Length: 203
Image 1 (cartoon, rainbow, N blue to C red):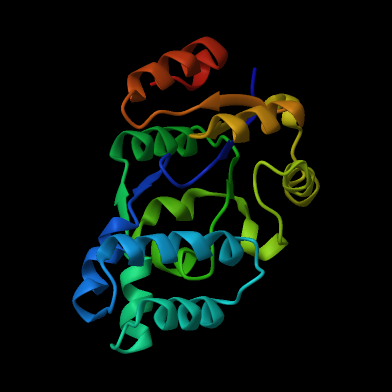
Image 2: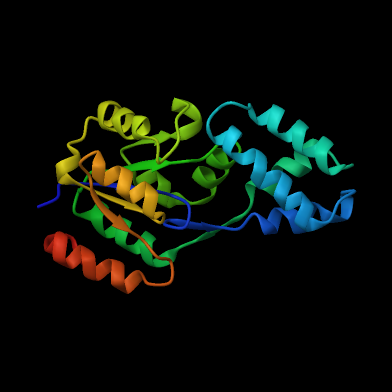
């Protein structure tokens, strides 16, 4: 019986769409929304790996797209790109009520983390977390899974790991985790897997 859960964040607990940011900043850019989107998403991995600081990321993006508004306005637009996945929140709250240990492992950054942790109370349910920009490693790099096991003190063979991306699930499985790939459009299918793997935790 699994004893703990390790959750990805994006497109698992909260859906995200960078196009929301591109559409908001487009009126103050010298480029099209499509080009703004390309620039922001192109630089995001360096932000998530901790190669760029938040200020460096904002400055590089603003310069590349010719954004003429305040940098804080750009930063806020990039932060607010999420939508809560209510069915998953219900499941997390169910696990919390059963006192099941809950953890996070996410490729994310210092712009998004303060925003979603403040906006969505569900993140207060987690016992600990590993964020890529803080440990300077990203999924599916095997290193981040070993960091997670060590930092969180969890046994991967007794931990269900939930991620929306196949390569991340595969890497988690290689590290010993009980990986489940999550599809935002098939939450019921996910719950069926939970019923098979951890019947005591199903709703």
